[in-house]
Amino acid sequence: MTTNASLDVQYGGNTKSGWLKYLPESWLPFVQLARLSPPAGLFLIFFPHLFGILHATIHTGLTATDVIRASALMFGGSLFVSNAIHIWNDLIDAPLDAKVERTRHRPIPRGAVSPTAALVFTISQAVGAALFLPLMPTGFIRTTLYSIPGIVGWTYYPWAKRYTYYPQVVLGFCLSWGIVMGSLAGGFVPFTTDGLWIFVDPSSFCLFAACTLWAIVYDTIYAHQDLSDDKKAGIKSLAVLYEGRTKPLLWQLLTAMTALLIICGSLSGMSIIFYSVAVLGSATSLGAMVWNVDLKDSRSCWFWFSNGFWLAGGSIAAGLIMEILNVGV
Image 1: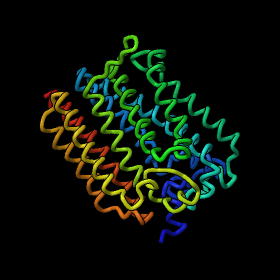
Image 2: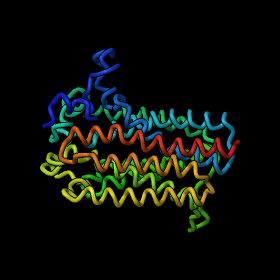
Image 3: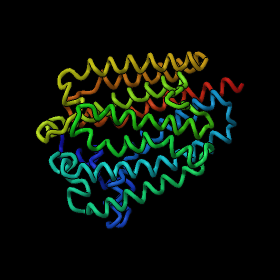
Image 4: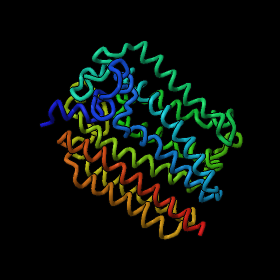
């Protein structure tokens, strides 16, 4: 059985451990609201942006200095985006969070932050994220237009779990939109429009789709933490829809993700390095996650979610970096 103590660190938004214990008490609810500790959310946002930069580099031959600059730009933007979407999600979800054991002590449900203060905090972080747009090589207006699908997706996401069993798909799309923004930061345009026609770079699409499936896998495992409470509260998810049949679904998603990464590598003319590190590494780490996780144990779901995504995301990033270094030799 999961204890209240363990729930505090399962991304419940109410932990006080680590560096948080050194903060002034008045700051703590806002840092918890932005979910800065543990920083899983920040890196879930940043990884796709990094993938986009690295994939763009393979196509455009960016210098190391340009890659570092683009990565720093995207990391700063990802920090503010992560803060904004976590606060926004908690603001909209507060009535539902109050019904779930793991989340009922988050800052808004417990009364530590008012809805008005949370909204102001959300807007401030969204403005912070917008300040990075003029720094993009594609210019403020064009970059803003490319960011609109992601903004719309993130705005809608909190309501997805109310009206559809597929909030993980919405989340996957939103997270993967970081690949588009990262590609733009790397000077590579992954899709263009001509009237009613949209022209998409095939390898970028495969990477986008693979990243979407990756997110669906780990967030479905994450959703199993609250399965019992979610069912009682009427919260929808793939965990609720596929209860008892989730692992076969996860294996299918993992297989499709692996195939998409292979196609991405083929279309981009990548070497065996990419397949050995990015494809095999991510497939193996996610496979270990799916094989070992006990979906009926909240602590097991948290352990594999909080640790497994690092290995998969790190493998893809490392594979792309090593491919760039190999091409540059």
